[in-house]
Amino acid sequence: MASMKEENKRLKKEYQSERRPMGVFLIRNMLNDKVFVAVGLDLPGIINSHTFQLKMGVHRNRQLQSDWNEFGGENFAFEILDQLEPREDMSDDGREDLAFLEELWLEKLQPFGSRGYNKRKLTREEKLRRIAAHRSGED
Image (cartoon, rainbow, N blue to C red; front, top):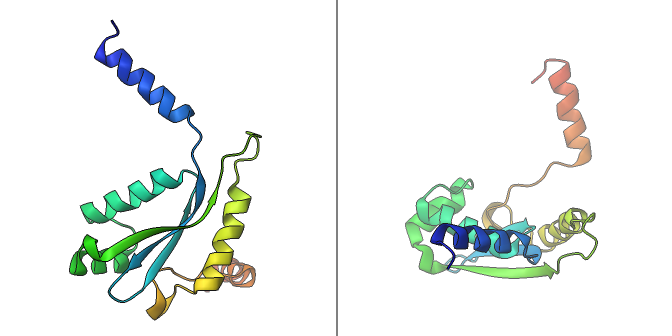
């Protein structure tokens, strides 16, 4: 009979080798309809991680955390927007497809300002301007 420690190792290894769906999801504040859009290579895992962070009061998005604390977790819903199945080709982990899907959903939902909790991503030009300003000491 296998020891508990051996059984835990086996289960952990099995979990790690399991290929999980990846995708785009959102967290919706059902009281004001504001949303937070995010992606993950392990959709169930990343949703679990965000839920845990919010419950513990340590989520990196301060406004989302503040509203969660104020309104309570029961007033938030997690919704999967797009899901991709794991690749057969292990050399392609799907990150490019995920980044593209995230861009599409951010463009479609515009979850910024009063509509959501996301921060606008810098355009290529804005990033280049920041780098140039930093190099010249104009920061």
